[in-house]
Structures are given as structure tokens and as C-alpha cells.
Length: 504
Ligand SMILES: C[S@@+](CC[C@H](N)C(=O)[O-])C[C@H]1O[C@@H](n2cnc3c(N)ncnc32)[C@H](O)[C@@H]1O
Image (cartoon, rainbow, N blue to C red):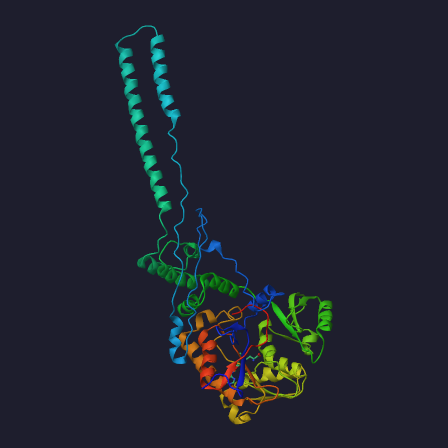
């Protein structure tokens, strides 16, 4: 089956990552934090540009206690691409390449000078005694034995002092040796004992910063320590460590620990962004335009009123939505008068944006499998004044049978996923996801994407596009799903037209 056909259904994605062939392809990161960072970085820069060199966390592997001459350089760890669902286990494999670690330099500690004052003191006392005895009138056996006594005491003192000095020197050398000992991984016993105790965060942090051991040992220990320190289960931390170069991994994990900025999307069916910003400012909301790439986004820095309960919110003037959630809809670029399907729609964040871009014209099928979630979907459609949408309650895999094959112009598949890209929003993902979960998600996503392709009319005059997006960063849920679709259907990947940010 050819990948490119004149009648091909076009497939595009949410955030642009350039494939080796130069075609922009689908990835699934829906983490507003990263997108915001990307957009800030990319002001005036096109996506073709190399991503700005990230600042290396020099402090990560350097023991601050000891001076060191060099920065560490850590090469990429494998990207863990996996081709087929059956091969999802490949996710965990991968070549690991990393430069050798150099030993830390140990600052030299100079030997202390001998204490000359002590000798002087003793010699001086002898001298003094001598001169004293010579000046003392009269001499005799008593004075002689006194002299011998003094000499003996003096010799004993000398010896004792020499012994003390020797001990002090030996102790100091031992200390120096102990301090200069290379970083050592904990033994199996020590690790087992550690498991029994609450984590010693200071110790873990110190160990994470250490270097000077073999690469494999280091990576193994890093997985254990990152997992303990940041609270990830073994599976997820293993996958993340295998997916990202260490410096990037640390940026990712630390970003997951920080709150995301609050963003709102102006509902252009009801108002204009400037008017909305004015009225919210008057209510004490500190905000600004989100970014150059969005005409409808606002970022909220601070607010004296609950942003989800203002009269403007209740009147549907805006939707509280992470910046990255704008992207799939911008990539879909639905046209007025088109027939569009939102296959997994609740609670309607993207459906309401699609409707706004279509100016409430054409027709949207907003589908959601979970009945309980239809309430929030319909409530949002109603609040935002959407009138061109039919709400459906099907398993998305059945939709081609319900709506018909080749029956619509565009499909948005914002797929159910593991949520591994939005850990900030839901930290329970750190511990709740397993390989089995990822495989199950990937299996469903593959079935859903085939259904999406089957619904789209490749001969649509204005459309013939599908956007596949997830809020997962797992390869089996993203790249592998697209690879699968490319093999199973006559489709091709096309640029998604979002020429900002940096390649994934
Ligand atoms: C990522 S959420 C969608 C978010 C929505 N697009 C938005 O922007 O507000 C995925 C949705 O897919 C629904 N879902 C799960 N399995 C499905 C299936 N087989 N068919 C259709 N929807 C499904 C989930 O209940 C969930 O509401």
C-alpha cells in the first residue's frame, strides 16, 4: 500500500515534530506548560530553527562540596520507538549512550607545619634551666639529680608530644583519604535497609548529584533515586529515563512539579478578546495576551475573583483551557459549512472552539462514550452559545457505521489516553500507570484512528483531514498509533500548520 495517494485522506497532528523525511508529524504532548515555554522561546523564531540550546543543569552531577573542573555531558538515551502494538514492550528497550564521567578533582589539603613553638618552648626551658643552674650559687648531688629529673621529664614530654603529633598526622591523612574516596553506589544490603525506612531526601539528592561510576550503574541508580524523590512508580520512571536525555528528563520532571499557568480562551461567538480583557481587568483579574500564536488566548497571572465563577464565565464569554489544548483545533482548522466530527468530545473544550471557528455554521457531531460526561458537554455547549452541534453517545469505533463511511470533511480525535503528559494536573499518574495501561490505551487509540479515517471523505473539496491528539507522552500512544494508521490505511502525514514552538 502506498503512503501517498492522490485520493489520500490527510492526517495531521497537534504539535509539530519533524520526521527524518522532513514531514511534520503527529505527536501528542498536550501539556500547556511546555507549550507556553515553547511559545515564549519561539518569539520571532520559526519551527524550522533549531531549538534553543537548553541550559545544562551543571549542579546536577557535581558535588558542590568539592571543586570540579568540568561540566558533565550526557548524551541522548534511546528514543524507544516502538512499531506495533504487539511490540509495545520495546518501549522499555533502547540503546543508551552517555559520555564517561570524569573523576572529581579533590582539592589538595596542605600538611600543617610542625609547631615550632613547642620545640622552642622545651629547648628554651632547658636553656633557661641551664642558665638558671649556672647562675644559681652552690652546686651538689641534689642539683645534679634535679637536673637529670628535669632532663628525663623533658625527654618524656618530647616523646609524648611526638606520639601525639604522629597520631594527629595519621588521623588527618585518614580524613583526607575518606573525603577523596570516589562516589560509591550503595550496596544491596544498604539499599534494602533504605527501602525499610522513610526516604532520606537529603541523601537521595546528594546521590543524584554524584558521578564517577559506570554508566549503567549510574542509570540504574538514577531510576531508583528519581522514582523515590519525585514519587514515580518503577515502570514510569524507567520509561521516562529511557526516552529522554538526562538533562531534558530533569527539566521535564521538574516542570511536572510546577503549577501550570491559568489560560482562558475567548469565545468569539460571544465577545472579542480585547473587550473580555477589559471587563475582567475591571474585576481585578490580572491578565495578558497568551502569545503571538493565539488571537483568542489570555493568560491569567492573578485574580481577586474566582475565574470560573465570574458573570462573564457564566455567560460563556470564555472557556478555561490550557494553552496546548488550543493546538489540535488550530491544526484541524475547520471551515464554515463543513461536516466535522469530534470523536471524544466531553467536556467540550475543543468542540466549543471548533464551533467558534466555524462561526456556528456547518455541522459538528460531538461524540462521547460516557453518558455521565454528556452533562458537562451539553452544559458547556449551551453556556458558550454553540448551536451547530449534535451530541452523540457512541463508542467512537462505531461511528463510521452510524454516520457513514466517507461522510464528513474533518475529524478531531482527541483520544482517551494515559495522561502522562499532564502530570502537573493529575499527579496520581506518577504511580497509577502501568505498561498494561499504556498498551490498552494504544490498542483503543489504533481502533479509533482507523474509524476516524474511515469516516473522512478523502475527496472532500475543503477538507479530508484528521487531527490525532493525546495528552500522553508515551511513544506507543502517539508515534506508534500514527505509524499503525499509515500502514493500515491510504493516508499520509501532512504539516499541521503550526509554525511556532520547537520540534518535538
Ligand atoms: C481527552 S478526553 C476528551 C477531551 C475533550 N476533547 C475536550 O477537549 O474537552 C477523552 C474522552 O474520550 C472519551 N472516550 C473514551 N473512550 C471512548 C470511545 N471508545 N469512544 C468515544 N469516546 C471515548 C472519554 O470518556 C473522554 O471523555
